[in-house]
Every structure is written in structure tokens, then in C-alpha cells.
Length: 386
Image (cartoon, rainbow, N blue to C red):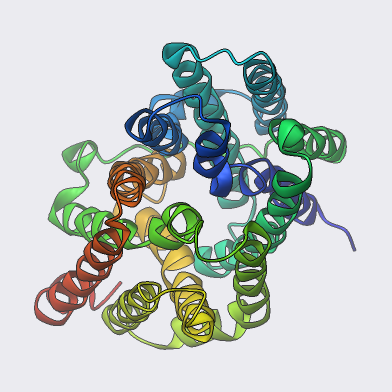
């Protein structure tokens, strides 16, 4: 039976294309259009990435108060507007840095609101199932589009560069059509919030956010930095194929590995995920043209790592903060991800622009290894029973 949650997974699949077909090659497109300097291009892209995470924090109350269906639709319409303007700006060689920055941030914020609305919908409506498994299923939908999307984006960028910015609009329209069948929000039980740790969530939650920040310094090395880093080594189509490999790995292994995560301890799962993330990131340093097999292996390792940490971090955010305030806990988690991902993206693209992209990869790997060290020393004390 095609349940309401299945519809959410379908919408998540379509809406993530709005990000996946455009943002992995956003910096590449800006470089090829030659409208801005390396620093300006890096700042525009990293600001959009930051907005994709921080928007959830500033608009969490809005998402909580309104039906998720309409929040998603309005956000998608705003994305269509912003992408149309990107197309017009590039077509008429409009190189106003402030205008590009504003609409890049608008796109990021709308993607953030859309993502938070769908995650919150699942968290509210799927209370009978463990949060980790619910987010694992959602992660399959996300990563299926996250692999196919960059491949499509690479093909369009190579053959129809002028129309590249219009590509997300197609999937935004498909997402809006899919929202037609989405039911209204389920009424939530009114439980009093725990005022004693409402703002920070206690030391467990603060430590947990610190680990997330470090992990998400490693995360964008493939998804945001590598397409620019490999620009002079391999074609955009080959980079798109690597994203496709990542998607296939995640779709095939998500449920078996998630079942393993359910049976193992939290510290061990976090340690294993970040170790794989570090190793995979380091494999991107050699010349991709001559050591392509290492790139493929790196993608596989990073994909397996994401299978573990993405749904695990989301479910832990709810458990460690306040289970009765799921929207806010996911919004705070998104904030932590955004700070590190945007910073790492800016540094990475900037470093690539001046011929030091390998340093960005090393920084990402070291950050993930620090998580391994902290997990081995400190984390059992805090999270062993969660």
C-alpha cells in the first residue's frame, strides 16, 4: 500500500534533485562563466551551503506552526524563482556580486526549510518505528537522487551550459505535483518541554554537536570540493559517474548497514563511520586521471560512512535533545552541520583555486580522525546507554 510516509519519501527524492543537479557543480559553473574571482565564487557557493543548514534554525518555528505540505510547496516556488534569476544573470552577464549572493542564500534557505519540513513530517508521523530506521529509509530516497542528480547535472553542464541553472526547476515542479497527495500534519501530543536544558541540551548534546561539526568538515570534501578539485583531471561526466556510484552503494547497503548499526554500540558506529570517511577523503588526493580506481574506492568508503553517520546523527539529535521537540532538535543539528560544511566548502574551493586542493582533503580527513580519537576516549562515558 502506498502510505502517506511513502509519499514523503517520493517527495524527498524529487526535492533533493533541486540540490543535487546544481550545487555539486555550482562552483564549476561559476568558474566557467568567468563572472567572478575565485574568492567571490567560493564565497557565493559556501554562503549557499551555509544557508542550506542555518535556514532550518531560523525558520524552525515557522515549520512547526504550519502544515508541512504548504511549507514545502512555497519553498519550492521560491527555488524556481531564484534559479530563473540565476539563468537570467548568466545570460545577460550580470556580474553583481551582491545580487548573486542574495539569491544563492535564498535558494539555500528554501532548500533548508524544505528538508526540515520533510524530516519533521517523518519524525511526527512515524512514531511507532525507531527514528533511526525511519531516517535510514529517508536517506535512501535522498541519496538515490544525490547520485543520479550530479550525473544529470554534469551532462547538462557539458552540453547545455547556458541552461544549467534552469535544471532544478524541472524537479521542483515534479515535487510540487507530488505534494498534492500529501495528507495534513498529524496532531502532536502536548508534552511540557524540559526547561532545565531547553537551550543547549546538556553536555551530552554539546559534545554530540562538536562531533558533528568535525564530521561535516570531512563530508563536503567529496560532495562540494572534489568536483572543482578534479576539474582539470577528469571530465564533469566522470565526476557525475562517481556520484552515481555513491548513490548505488548507499541504496544497496543502507538497510543492511542500518540494521547492523541498530545492533552495535553508538561509539563503535561513530568511530567506524569517521574512520572510513577519513580514509576515503585521503584517496582523492592523487591525480584522479592516473589513479581513478583510488577515487572509486574513496567514493565507496565515504558512501558507507554516510550510511552510518547520517541517520544515526539525526536519531541521536532527537534522543539527546528533547524527543518531544523534534523539529528544534533537527534544526539545531542542521545548524551544526551548516557551520562546518560551509566553512570547509569555502576553504576547499578557495584552496583549489590557488592550486592547494590537497590541503583541503587533508583537513577533512584529520577532522574525521579527531572524531575517532574523541570517540575512543570520551564518548563511551556519555553515550554508551543511548
